[in-house]
Image 1 (cartoon, rainbow, N blue to C red):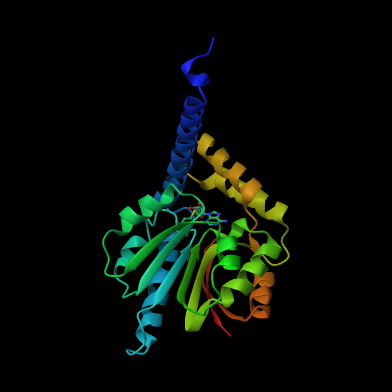
Image 2 (cartoon, rainbow, N blue to C red):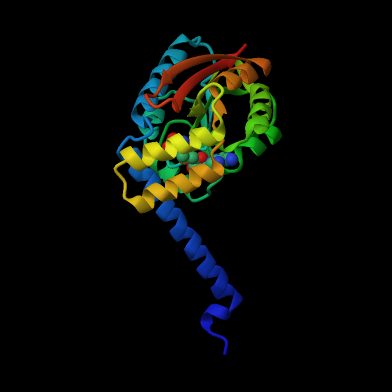
Length: 253
Ligand SMILES: C[S@@+](CC[C@H](N)C(=O)[O-])C[C@H]1O[C@@H](n2cnc3c(N)ncnc32)[C@H](O)[C@@H]1O
């Protein structure tokens, strides 16, 4: 006998419900990581704010208000207070996960510049949006490591073509030590989580499972060479204490 759940509409509603629950569960775990500052978000946010402030102070008063794009913006839990202070011309928050965009919009609130929100893959954005040299500030925090090595180089080449003269790209992420294999990185990060992260074992294993499947942190030296080969100048702004999290400032060479 058919039940209500056998109806196609009911099935799709129940699938949507379970993916919403899955998102809520995973995002709650990520928020627990942020709340305990386990990946250096506070230091990264402070260094990002400093870099943005000094960049904006050096801009000519006659220059048009800057256009900013944020790739993998998430819910803007930490960055929103920084963004609210910036004299931007526009801000675009882009994320693969549609569910974070209304959270980001709410966190940012009303600001005196145009905002738009785009559900998209950041590599597709790099490949498909116009290479018109119009971006003044590109930002990405803990998202680009989802691309593999070749994709990162493709991303860097195509993103470079979108940057305005005198622009900057702030890239916070996890990176491997020079010469370190991905397996070695995954094992030591998993060890760090199990030994030192004050989360229950279910949350710890959820994060380890995610990073084992999806994270492809760049080799620190190799990514500098790849960036320089695609027209960027690279400068490290901050390194976390675990040979993983770091923030780099890239400018057009
Ligand atoms: C670890 S969270 C970081 C969120 C925020 N930037 C922060 O630092 O708190 C990674 C974010 O990147 C997004 N993301 C992952 N892969 C992506 C991709 N290929 N394109 C765009 N966004 C992506 C995820 O949906 C998620 O919101």
